[in-house]
Image (cartoon, rainbow, N blue to C red; front, side):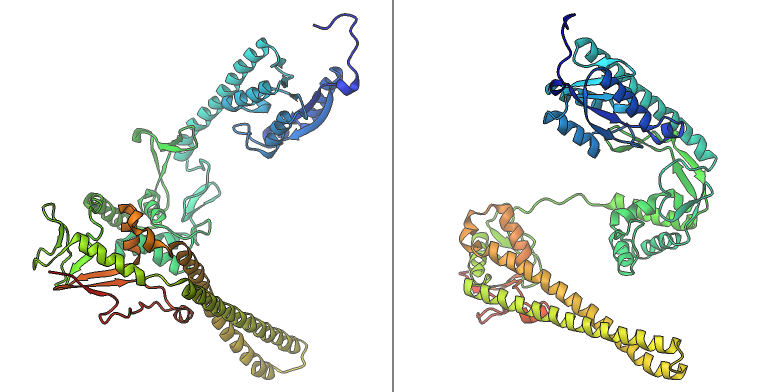
Length: 515
């Protein structure tokens, strides 16, 4: 406690504090300005002989969550680094309305021996009583926020029944206009096309692929996915039934469905007829019912990949150590098949010298392609400038319309041809670049695969086999293994994929084993 004759501390020992300003847009509209809160805080600090170091401005920021705001992070950093030892704010609700965040902020201040000063509630967290009141008022602020949220939620069904906006963006295919939800002239045809494509192809991924290939994109400019297609197909708003008040925030940032008894349906103008909507959703339901459970993981390396010369897939029965064809009873020991495959890996990867030559050649092809693109772009720029010059001559009346056409059309044709050629070359360069980088990574990481094969576990071996094996055909006393060899850089430049041939007399790899 301060003694009666104790003098105020010198200025260089004054408590260093910050001022926290957070005023919502609604408060500002009512005349509750940030300047008012700052003046009030400065006056309090002056009376306490405190030094104001900085002011944290969060005007028009919601109090629901503030800890991730840049100013909040700056304030907490100042506390941790000792630049301030106290924070002045007008009331707890101005600091934050979320109880959890308020308590977290209080813990940081307590850990670093700093004080929270709420002018309205007269709270000082340096004392036990202050911490008690802080917790109590924080809970009240949270209760106030939840009360507001409940009042807003209660109005949702009423506003929905009246056809008014309940917040958020309009669904894809619709737009809000004069507080009414109506079809969007740009998006509604796309949503209708989704139903037509799905009725025809019955595959969500196929529909997404066709939409993307046609140049269609979502409202955010992203490509369509099968999940997006599913959501747009199942939402009943497309057939004219807008569903509202059917979800709620679980409090952790996720949304969950409310009981169906609370759902509200409002009639709006449909973008597809109800019959088409029902047909598509019946297909979805039928596919969900018929969907098979995930199959068992293979117990043997080549299960389902080894094929008999008669065309039948070969498996290892539980009572045999051999891959057996059920049709013609052709068989091969499982250990022999793995040994032969292991030996075939020797020829799969290039030697270090071949690897260096391969990458160097591929890099050179890519550079030549990019140089050609730059040359064509310069030529295109020259032709475009000449087009502008001819057009200006026509505008100035220097040449007639006939002369303009004779000069302009060849240039226009040339520019169009160059645009087409440049686009094709850029696509080839992209393919080359990706292939080059992918080949570099594969060759670098997998060069010693052969020497480490026996150390790999079953899942790793199976994954490698699935990725590099075209086919394994078991003949009558021989076996042919086709591996996906890396294409040469010449074939990369042509955008073609080939499978090299091994030096073995049989195609790719042909081996015999004792019968």
